[in-house]
Length: 165
View (cartoon, rainbow, N blue to C red):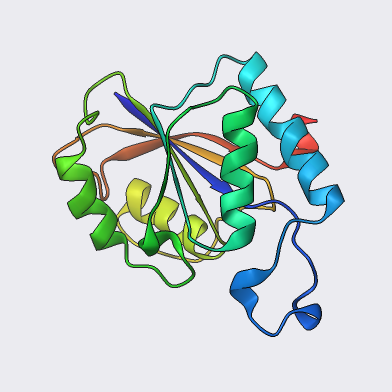
């Protein structure tokens, strides 16, 4: 079964300090906490065949930290991971992904509420807006049917950085 990790970006700079939300970087605390989470995941043996990231600065920085801590070497920007992205675009991409096999592992670095909603769609086939991914938090999902992932997954991890650290 493929493992899918949905990871929210780390703590970012205040919105009020940036005219464009897309440009907000991680704060020093956000970088440190994200590094700690990445080290914890690495110690637990987590590795990614690919890290897909939202094109926003804070998400790309989070993906870089995951890579630097040894979780995966390949990073690619994926526009549907930006806020309000469409999961159907991911499903279409997924069906063609070269590593779409039983033992693959993929990270999606993005934003709340999208990651929580996507997780609900993967597991239950609908959204209730009940799953919350904290900053630098992780949701782990096993894809049970690689030909039809929506509604055919099981949740195996839902954790905040505070619990991991």
